[in-house]
Length: 300
Length: 317
Image 1 (cartoon, each protein chain N blue to C red):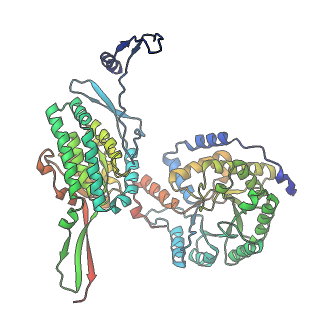
Image 2: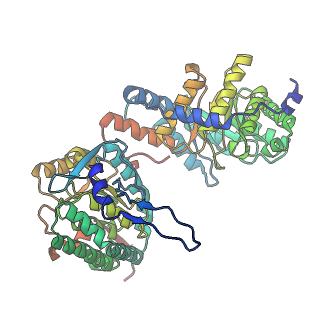
Image 3: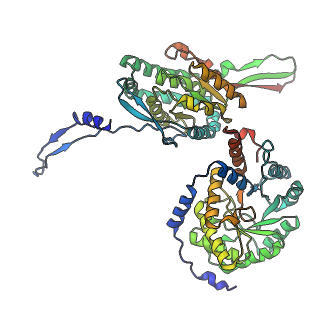
């Protein structure tokens, strides 16, 4: 592909228009059966995540158990889509989720800053894949991107994609560091051109993380890419999505921008650590009619 | 209603001025008319004053049947939001030193003192006679001072070192129960509110209160006092509305740890205790406490929303 095309300034994105459209879609009221459907769908799209410096094998095993047994007191619940861990915990996670179809995702490429040599990043990815990761969440080099080295960023993503082999590649743009919506759109386009299976908003380490506006811009990039190439790319907002209400609002954004084929965990994920419990509390509330307390749900 | 207020307010405040300014220019004669600015009574949740999400209201009238205010008729969702705010505020409030909680409660009294006239007027407007309204506000201030004093003393009174047979140092201390839901007394409107919630927050709990249906205005004005008294947002959340409508939500909510009912409707008492069983809520009933007298103030009201924690600490002989 002709990389020089990235140097052309994109048609400017209408920031106010994006914010207004996102706000309008997010004000929809979803109730009763539709709400329960949406809650279960959202639960099934969660990438249960632990990316902390104090992670231990025990913590990762506990997370995996939670992923498979969200709330056994309420039968008929789906489980989450995946667990997301650092590369050195992939093997432990893989063992812990054996027998379920929960995927194991690993962050890689010098997560979260992305500052390292290409070789180290590729090795990081290969290590994660060799350990058994089904999905790799890479970070782009934001420093190089902001310097205008778009070709470098695109080539790097392509190289990582190659190193992934059979594993799915999610590309984290870290929208909170990209400054403008135009940059987010450009980064989305070059990531998809480079072979990303998913584009993802954030590492969760930077504020602002995922916002409705950022997500809408990325969803529209996915839509335009689909019209151009026929390939469906997935979307993963991450960071700051803590409540069931927010999750349902995101589903509305997806449904209205991309349509129903994207309403599955094959094409849409939530990167979150505390979202699952809030959805569970809502589901139990719908079931029993009684407002719930975190005291009665396992920690995640 | 609005029209009438306009008329009465317009009269005494109308004056005409026709002065010659110092620079010699003749000022045009003009009429100053101050319109009465009526207060919108909203809810007090998480340190803010939101309207009810339901958009509903109920009327409160003066004894002559004239409308005083449209009060927010809080819904179950307002209650849910208030519980979320109370839960969020709990850790920080319970973690304050007892002395600091006492200072803040004293501060509430200071702020209430400065607003005496407003509270008296609100009580009179809804039917209290002026003398008893003044007594009630005075008693509310006194009660705040009373509990401010107890804040760093109840722990010493109610804790104990227990004799045990083994080589252990065994002691019991009081800890706050958590989020406490309160149906405040119908009367007295202000003093009842203060007397039913201040012991709970003195002990480090956070509260969600349904104010008196008959005297709801002074409860929301009390929220304004709380907001400027260094009481962190969410420690006290004030709702106005109907007890019968909110009873089942108050008593079944799994994230509410205790419920106080200051009233004597047997049906409410029974429902409250039955549905509180789901998460073993502590239920506290004050069916016939006389809040106006000294019997309405006691450190035992603090103890009612405390849990006893007993520790066995090994010691050598």
